Length: 326
Image 1 (cartoon, rainbow, N blue to C red):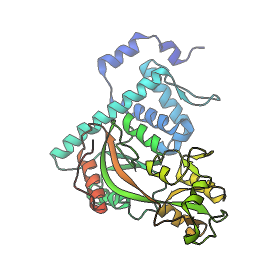
Image 2 (image 1 turned 120 degrees about the vertical axis):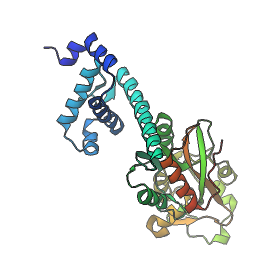
Image 3 (image 1 turned 90 degrees about the vertical axis):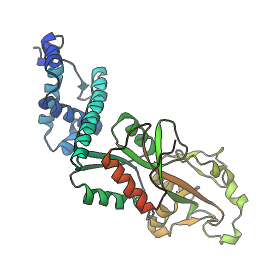
Image 4 (image 1 turned 90 degrees about the horizontal axis):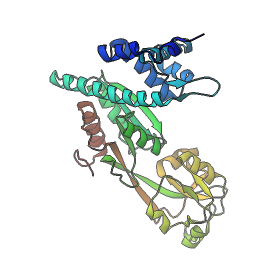
């Protein structure tokens, strides 16, 4: 027995209907559901986000496939993944909703009001940093633009960069180890990192004046994969390291085994167990400052909401005036 999609897969009437009548309100609703499902990674994960049941999501995706005459995704025991048509449709969704937001923003500017969405990718494990202006800036958005919908995503660096480039994130707030030509950078503040060992490491019990650079150079070290500071090579031997971690929490776990030393943000180390299980090694001599910036896709115009957010960030951080770093 054929499904509605299989009967309509080669049907010119459906495709012609889309071509002749364009995208309607009902289509936009279905496309928003599809976009959410893709970004959640599947139907079940999207239930909480959409606040509807699995059966309702499944029906809406099926309706969209019938409407467009294309199979957009597979779901079942094999898991969820997009077909080639689905990948094209998802990217078209991002472009479409970005254009809608730009249109809405222009109208809102004309009547001096602020609506729309602010999707922000934030690097994880920064909530304990008292120098971060993020909480202040989010509060400013709530007070000055209460109709703006805020969506926060705490994740790792490469995911923020991908999200900004493909349009899922309006902006990212992240550490900058090396500026890339695909982005514009707006400097905010610096995060300070020290070199740490755990309470099970031989260096932990030594007085600071007995710890030498030679001892540090000979210690096993955690290679924090994304934190590519050239300065680190002045203190540590990374060439022989067989321990690699991506996120700050993973670095901490390896340090706490007592087998490795490694760099951690000062605020995070102090927060972890009150700092009792970690010891900063020669903190007066070994310290690294990492710039944090608000990042947008290269050449992107800052709308009124994003400009307000950036100004609030920079005001709290007491950083230079609004500027773009190329």
